[in-house]
Image 1 (cartoon, rainbow, N blue to C red):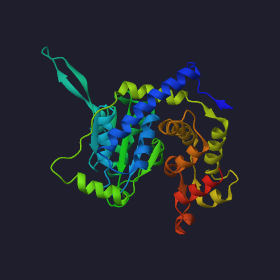
Image 2 (image 1 turned 90 degrees about the vertical axis):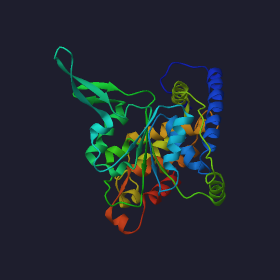
Image 3 (image 1 turned 60 degrees about the horizontal axis):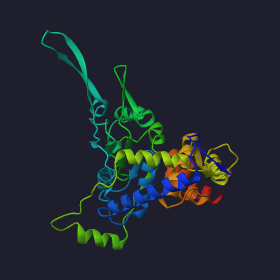
Image 4 (image 1 turned 135 degrees about the vertical axis):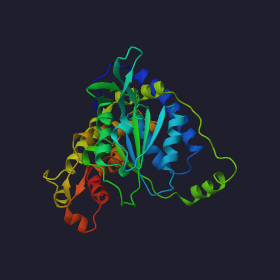
Length: 334
């Protein structure tokens, strides 16, 4: 049994044809990114899955792992209008959203004119997002969820598609502000970036220390990306996958009958986590060349989708337990 999203009907033949076209485009995207980003296949996959699913991603890793380079490359390859904001403690909300300025015409009449900020882009890179104050971080909340901003009572719609890829350094915490739970929940996935394998690092040494670096080239247009995102929302989802998502997310909440969760988790993921898993499993299936997601997709995406939507108890942290440990145990029960 499968559950279809409530969209305009599409025949199985048309679905297969659209999927084949999308697979060809995704293959070109992967090749385009692979010319600039060496190794890190898992990171590239998860970041692209987040974009194909229409969401935002938080990239977490130590300095020097090409987080910024990855975002810049994706902007070029996908043909998105990109902007970068370097988050600093003195950054103000108006530096992100824009502001109104007073102007005077030739007759002396004064009026306000809105000057758009860098958030009016299709791909926004929030570099070191946790270095800005909570007040500034909150400027992104409405935009990431509702895809518009409100300035002086007036609504301004953001370009479509609109994605935020934020970076964060997990080591240096002095002078930083932890992202509030509401902000974290807006990110479809948290993508942890680890050190590259030795062969990938060898290639980095050989290909990035010469006179010329590899340059990304555009292979897709924003309108085509939106079409692929719509196709993903139309993909059928087997009942077994829906049950696996519900079982996993609900077992991560205290008070739902799971003894391990009750012992270690202070608060767990809400329905937005279930929605994120539903979209991401579809996107991962298409990324791998399949027309429907499987329970394996749920297991593979459990950590990046859930880990930033959970908090451990003080006792669990004192014991050295991590959120990843808790999620790994929960995945075994799916």
